[in-house]
Every structure is written in C-alpha cells, then in structure tokens.
Amino acid sequence: MSRLGDTIREARIKYGMTEKQLAKKTGTAENFIKEVESGRRIPSDDQARRLLKAMGAKNPVSTELEVAAEPEVKLRPRPMPYVIQVPEDQPKPTKKEMEEKTASNDAWLDALGGVVKRVPVIDEKGLAIDHVLFPIISGKIEGGAPDKVLMFRCPDNSLSGFRVFAGDLLLVVPEKAPVDEAFMLVFVKGKRMVRKIKKLDGSKIMLQSYDREFESDTVMWAEIQILGRCVKLQRTL
View 1 (cartoon, helix red, strand yellow):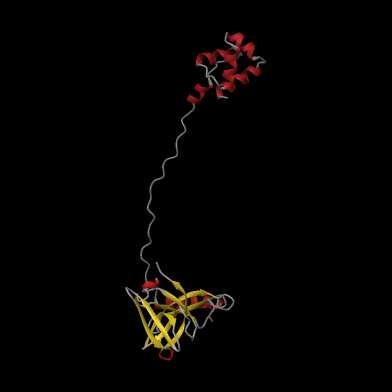
View 2 (cartoon, one colour):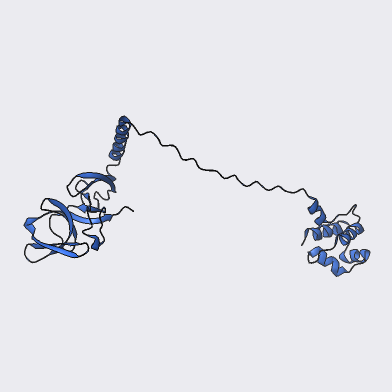
C-alpha cells in the first residue's frame, strides 16, 4: 500500500462508505478504487482531490504533494579531515628514572617468579646480551630446570641449510650426553656453537653444519663439551 492509498482508504472508512459507493459517487470503477487503496495504482492529483472531496474532505491535497511540501531535511555535514598529532620526542629518562624502572620491573618479576622466568640470551663467547621471558609450566621450561635453561643467539648462517639463520635464538635445555639427530650447543676449541649431532660407532660423533654446502667434523666425544640440547627456535621478523 502507498501513503496516498492509505489516506483515501482511511477517509472512506471514516465516512462509512464502501468502495462501490465511492466509485459511484466519483464516477469511477470499483476496481479503480481497490487498486488505488492497495497501492497498485497511483491516481493523478485531480483524481485524488476528487476522491477526497467526495468524502467531505476540505481543501483536499494529495499525500504526495504534502510530502513534497515538507521542509528539506538537511544532511549532516561531512566530517572535516584531521591529522592525529604525533607526540614530540620525549626527553630521555635520567639515570635515576632508569634505575627506578628497572627496580620496578625486578619487583614485578619477583612477584611472578613461580610463573615466568627471565632466561638469559648468550652469544658465542658466553656473554649475556639480553633476556627473554618464558612461562614456567609444572616447574619446568620446555622440560628443563628454569635456572639451567638459556637462549643462544646464532652468530652466523652455518646452519642456514637447516633453516636456522644468523640472529635466531635457540632455547637450550641441559644435556650432557650427545643425542642423535639433535641440534646441540657444544663448546669446541674455545668457541660455543650449535651443530647437528650424528652419533658414530665407539665414542665418535659427527658435528654437522650446512651453509652453502654440507660440512661435517668427526670428533671424539672427549674432545668437546656438550652444553645442552636445542628445543625451540625463536625468530624476530
């Protein structure tokens, strides 16, 4: 139904007229009245005025004209573009502020001592260069004692063929004996390095690396020191 059809129907019912009576009074067909009221036909302004006038309406004006005469609804203005201000460079914190922040962080870590652990990151010289937080689950970090695990930062691409690259961090858990086909942190000729282990007959083991070419060194177990087994890799994008 249309708004005009509703208006005509409501007026007809108000004045107690049937569709047939209204059609006869206005000289139109009953079917025309039904189509107008149902919205299937839109009468002209003259027809609408005649229908409404026949039912006693004063100064009949079609609903469509009333709508057209309504004041224009103003649209909301488009928002003005704006720029999010970037804060100016803040002054560097003082030494005292840094110490206070560090103390605050340490207190926070102490409070969470049974939940997380700050694991040291070491380089090939054994120097701690950073720390990484790890969750403690059932008193362990990846199966190792929390105070014994460490992260080793790979210094080069000697394991790139195994998809381990320079700068990658490897989580190392304590292990004293060689594990076949495992990546292990070893101490050889005064250097710490990670190599893939291959156990051979007797007390021999093969230290495997793979950069552009596959390389291996066969050594006696007694010639090296095994520091731990690598169980997880962490890479920074």
